[in-house]
Length: 389
Image (tube, rainbow, N blue to C red; front, side):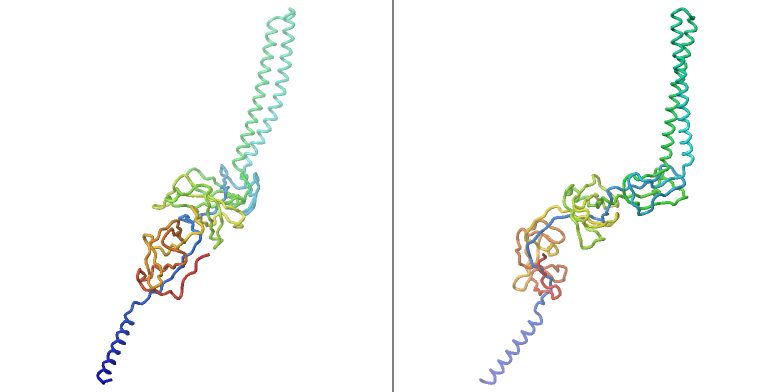
């Protein structure tokens, strides 16, 4: 081989190596992406509350006496369990008790007067009868008979008046009992004393109309609990009583409890501007399942609208606008594909057409350079996520 040819071959080799180096340096660098394998499973369509809900008691009342006064007796303490009808609080009412004692004494006196007046009326009526008999035989004058009859009628009227006095004093006894009831609080149902405002000797004031003052006693029936939560007004038409729900509680993280919609409010609440909601209430399917709950716990309600089992599903985070996904093709590039979707929630979306189980889709759509046709490499930190169980 001549030296010229040898030098030519060496030059060509150098040029080829340079071209290869420049291609290697300038080649498209693969983008690290997180992938998720398409699988089959359950997909639910659900909606959740817009703001935190609350655990509520089926019965809760904030009690105050009808009239104000000095607290004479507090028969319970905060945290006590009470029975229906149990005495809770009593204000000073000695004056009313004195009035009641007086009224009862007047009843006794009035009844004695009834006995006396009616006995006299009976005697006068018998005397009038005797005078009438004598008048018929001509032994007495007509004026004497008339006088005896008038006396009998007057005595009978006195008897009836005495009976009316008894009824009046009995009504007065009832009135004093009602007045005493204005100063006493009894438990309207069995429950737990949540809060007491006031101490013995302090003055308790009821809430006048239009003025918000703390109640004297807050009574809660914690044997029956439910969850109340606000839903966006747009979602309200989709909700009805009896629908299944999942209830989660901040106090019991990573747990949820099945339940049913109990009630949907018939009106929209406008607590804040641009935030119109409809309150819903839900019961636990198994009230004992969460254990001991406190009224006022934060809670969330997820209403389940529909369920599909054993369907092809794609992570919702892998969807682009217009129902598109980026599929990891076998040639090392990302392929854009249009799919037909069905039910969806924040975690999964049902795939009706366009994807099959086992294919991999990109879930790291927010990364720069992630687009159709881009070379990809599996992110070493995330790899390819296995299908969820």
